Length: 143
Image (cartoon, rainbow, N blue to C red; front, side, top):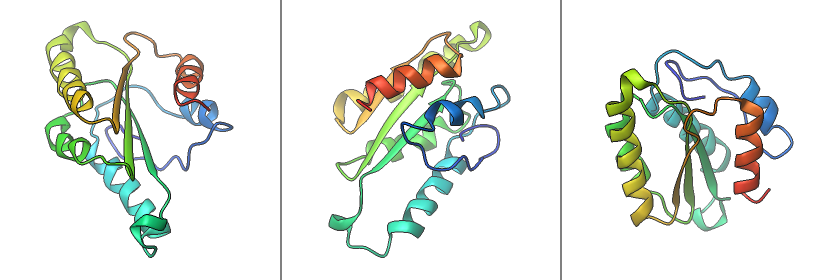
């Protein structure tokens, strides 16, 4: 999970997405890089011994409020997305007090998505209901 501290929530699939999103503790600070590093380590541990062509696609779902303190450090990670590592960035929530920070981050992620077909950015604006988010993400991912 991407939050003020990285949290291992396990693999996501269509049968557990709603349950996993319900486990997220909403609120607190947001840092993406620690959780990204955990996700990368998990993938490398499981599949790193295989030739790249034999590895499954590493699909990364980032659920964020758009106010990550380390969003600039995460941009090169998004920019490096390719057919073997794809990203979906789901931006949930919106805080009027942090509108400028939120917009700057979402705009930067969206700019990467506009030039890289392996990155998709989806905004849920003020939606924080995990069931609605899970349903929408599942539908969007075609699962």
